[in-house]
Image (cartoon, rainbow, N blue to C red; front, top):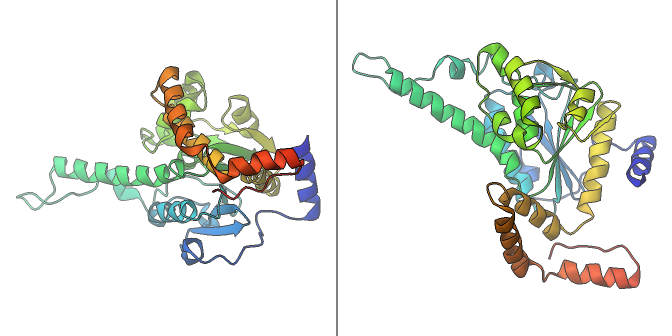
Length: 309
């Protein structure tokens, strides 16, 4: 209820992520430039915008080279506590730019043989290297040490689903359309959806989406657990992401980032191994200035002000 009241207040005031008040912080975020991405910072929240609206944020060569740089910039800024991934224009992303990335689909040369033509093995090696590069771009989102919230509206297709699956939390506008589309264009999805979605939705729902390539709407996405919540429209989803990001950013960044690290470390471990890991983690990380501040604020009956130290 408190979050909904804050969201209503934020919407009524006209404040939204699409026009943040950026702080004058010098660093990688300020230096970042890209023809397809932009970064804005508001207090402790950085928004990475997919910023190619004229192409419905199709993912072309610039996207794959610039996304790791953008995530590196927000990951390396100690003032940033939460990251939002959102998109300008009417759609989040229609996925891979098939025109610009056609060589990846038809085979990439990897050197020429004695007859002046690349061998099948060389082409396969080149294609594999390129796929691994694209995978690494999406993985840069998953590997961000700060929580990452996806704010989705319009189409979120193919590579768009790969991208949001690499985020920690997903919020959607009512007009959002999702599709693991690759089977419809004779491709096995290879950028992370088939690996990350099993921890987000059930095996049966994933199989249905991946085998059919069908579209599902935001209501269905929420029903199967793909998104946490659905709000009215793009403006509302940006605002909702901002409210949630502020709620997270108010906590100790040591605790929040530690929690994300522990959740990631659970993968492949038994409960006993996970408990042992977090015991070791807290043995080294528990004694922080933020813990002292939390206890002091509790005793003084005031909100804590965490510094991340």
